Image (tube, rainbow, N blue to C red):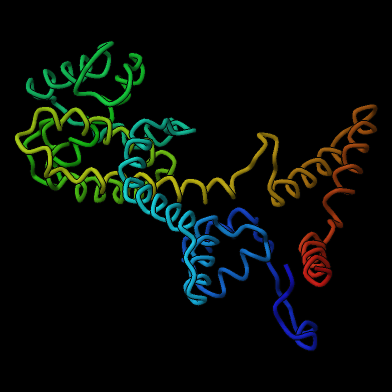
Length: 316
């Protein structure tokens, strides 16, 4: 993509960022169609099919022409968009998250679960287990699950009920998962969990489990239509988005070291070298040289990245 500035202004560029094309396309598509987004996506050869059809239809209208095939395709596309929210809801309910709750996060809030557990909740959890594990259930969306999944859902339900009972002054019952205020309570719970230091990926898993229990609660409440399932889905998607951002800054390899840790390793190796004697000292000398080579004069990675970015922008 060309740098959209005057030639004289290019020398004044001091900062530039490299943005993945997939992120750029998603952001511009979400922003909506306008002259700027259309121009950029066209230059990237990523113009959405519907946008191209709309542009062609508008050009035909200006020329007092009609393409019946094109208009029919646009009409079918609009009908698909009307059902998109329903399809997305079903997809999110059925989709398993690509990660699990962190054990250290669960340990932080281990004392927040409902305790003691009333007999009503015990009976409802047994009914929930049967609801989720039965081979056939006309009230359940999706197939049966394994015991591990159900036990994890039940543990999370007790944590959620523990919070709602204490902070929202509600009588504990799984029917609360089908309550009109379940979205507001879950949001407050997730905000509280975030204050305790839990990761967003864990929050996404917990929210997903709330959605699962809510699906059962809708079969036992008097008015299931009053339950704001869409609010729970929004919270899950937002937690997933935050989790993806956090994972961008996490080490990709278990052997990854921060720059500070690498410097500490070099200093520790040098100290061990001075304290060693005989053959051990000779072996440590090699380690000191290797660590010093990699840590005393590191390459200017930021400068290289900027130079690569400028070269790419100015050559396209």
